[in-house]
Image (cartoon, rainbow over all chains, first blue to last red; front, side, top):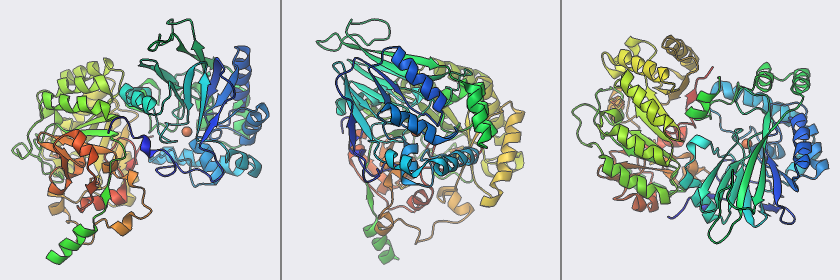
Length: 306
Length: 305
Ligand code: SF4
Ligand code: SF4
Ligand SMILES: [Fe+2]
């Protein structure tokens, strides 16, 4: 066999089909040395706005969105218009795929009745409140974006390179699994989201995995801040947060997770006005997840409150 | 009879491995300290038809699993903790990836629970304990799992929870489907009594095999997966498209078909990964209808509150 199942990529498989007009691969112009990446916006347009401003202030040469624009939050078109106006490229998330195609659910695969109940509420709200024009725009999101970060080859996707809705959690994703995938796909850096909790790992020999986490809701850590990832090609060689030098080179990756503060109370007010469930509001105010808990592995779940 | 059988076999579709996401180990063979009436492979203290795997055997498969890109390790039996090397085996697995043990929890005394917590704390990966409990009362559970099983299982859960685990409680549904909310509530109350306040509960559909076939009914002849049924069906829903079961004597297609000769797919893991599975068995029909009931997430009715 040799390496993980890259043959599974492409249309087919759970939640993997694309809308007809979507390209498979997108790109970023040039070879920026510093790129900000975020995903899981969940209609949190306030956090999105704050994150964009923060990333620019910190010298991001490009900004990339890893998908899942809708869910939980209010007025999905606000998030969509913001991304469009800023010209930020977006990788297709499972949520975007569902909304663009008008599917029955968000493809998160919940089986727990309670998780399902809330997932349905947010999905139906988002679908009903996303304009036809926005949906048409979302139908063009590519399944993956490849670009160079300095000399590093980056492959950006939503869940995993092989499946848009695959969860890659820190405590259930083996290093050999990610490493095999990175090598097979000829990417030095694998960059995804979908789980909602940020983490990264040095896979050895110049390979990296980065999960950018979510801007839409806190990281189930009791803090109100939400997170994005700043990726820099680090030519000064090994240092804090770098993986040192690959064979024959001295360029490493520097990953910084940046906490973002935003007007939580104003968002809470908007959510209340839109009639969104109290549980969602509690999550952004308390920093603890109250729904979608089923998919959390034991360790991540134990760190949260619910 | 013979003609029907032949027709079924001819029609059995084949499923290739898409990727070896889940590697299962029949680590306790068919040896169990309990003798449950519904056990689908009829495990018991004296069922030695499949013997324990040694730490060395598991290690070899673990080594092979790295280049195959395995994502999760599962340990089952019988009762895994009947295997004297179980904790060392778990330590080996947890060096490489997340591990899940399917246990009846009756052997999880406080000291063992503490050692398991230490193993988990020493690994970057999750150690999940999946505990089978088949009723919300002693009477209901022990009628299936034998006298005393309820009390010892509940104590095992208490010990796990005390050590910070959030065990996944699985229960085979033995009631009409519409009564499930009632039983979920019963589980929540029972588990709260042992300090488990945010339980992870998974209700599984019954598999009509082994002892269970006698207890309720066996599969009917027509309940088979046919080639026609596979048209347009997403084969990734079937565990055998992304898992294999390693035993002390070879590799099987999936943990459900430990006993079926038709489900033996190789001597070694690499060979088994290359060999497609023919869906000849009637249990495949349940899989087809229910999806991957064996994995930690996926089909099965959860019950979180
Ligand atoms: S169902 Fe589980 S606990 Fe019961 S006899 Fe079978 S292996 Fe043992
Ligand atoms: S029982 Fe299910 S997982 Fe096993 S071989 Fe049949 S279809 Fe595949
Ligand atoms: Fe997602």
